[in-house]
View (tube, rainbow, N blue to C red):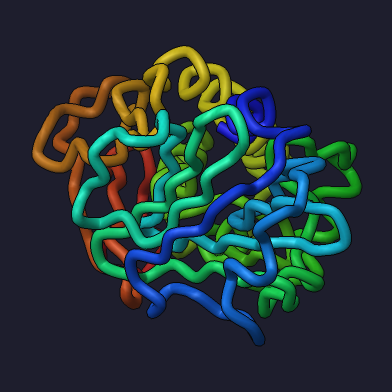
Length: 259
């Protein structure tokens, strides 16, 4: 996603800013005063954050669960959920859409949590031994570990489910309870599922951004359907505020734990 935005917009100057809903914005001055006249130099993905670097200023977006981007020609009809539009020279607009206004756009100020995020899951270069040592030091459940942005950044609910299904691990298994083989499987699944997911999303992403491809998912969003590996019925359970999709046969619960 960020590659497409970078290809379309890097090197171009912002000529206008249109705010559809100020609720998503965090800035010390009006964003048009901050951005108009500045040239976009880079678009970088840091975990769940997207950082747009302009001349002397950064705009950081945490889209949360609902925020999506769209690159459109100026004059194209904007959807009702469009919260912010940046018009660039040449007649192209970057639009931030968020139908529940959950995400946040930080302009000229640091986004909370950005400085504390761990390495990006898509470029993780830890060895298996390093991963094992760091994971065990956290002393957490495996699903909580995957979503701990200070450990590895960029993994949300959907890919946490996919990684654990691929590794045949129940979400509530504690890292310290994993055998050497299970830890190896966990590490391998994290790397392979994220790599495959990035490739699939890039292939499936429509020409205009604004959709989250999910057709390649094996377990997420498949509650009530057969597990593609064993045929058991995929189940959905709650874990805190999150929905969790898993296979009760492939991912057996820890001793004494009910699904």
